[in-house]
Amino acid sequence: MLYANAFAPRLLAELAREFPINTNESREGWTPAVDLTTTDEAYILTADLPGIRYDDLDLSVEQGILTLKGERAAPEDGERTRAERRFGAFKRSFSLPENADTDNISAKYENGVLTVTVPKQAKPQARKIEVVQH
Image (cartoon, rainbow, N blue to C red):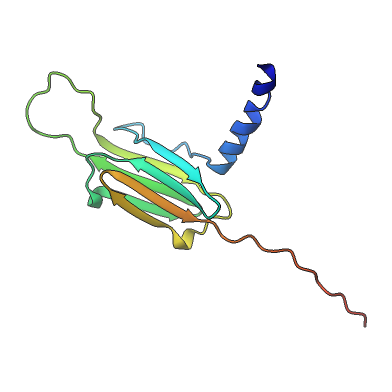
């Protein structure tokens, strides 16, 4: 068991480097669940946003920070005897890795799920440089 746990700190550090989360998240309202995954071609953020209209979402990127903001309005359909759902504004921000292609980010919203695709830039290939004698 000790052998498996020895790798845990390194694995967590690698994940934190891959998807660091900023601390400027909303303390009011609610926080939507978000999955962050990576493929060979892109970083993918998937957020569960049930009950939010498409035009109540704001997705932006600035200086390598991807920010998702929105608001879920509370229904005005009578007095509640039990309330477990959260309403109000939210904000989630994520630091993008250096190789993120921020000019080609795409997003789609379907059935209350937002999927943001951040393509990876191609890594520069090593090349041999010829040295000439003068």
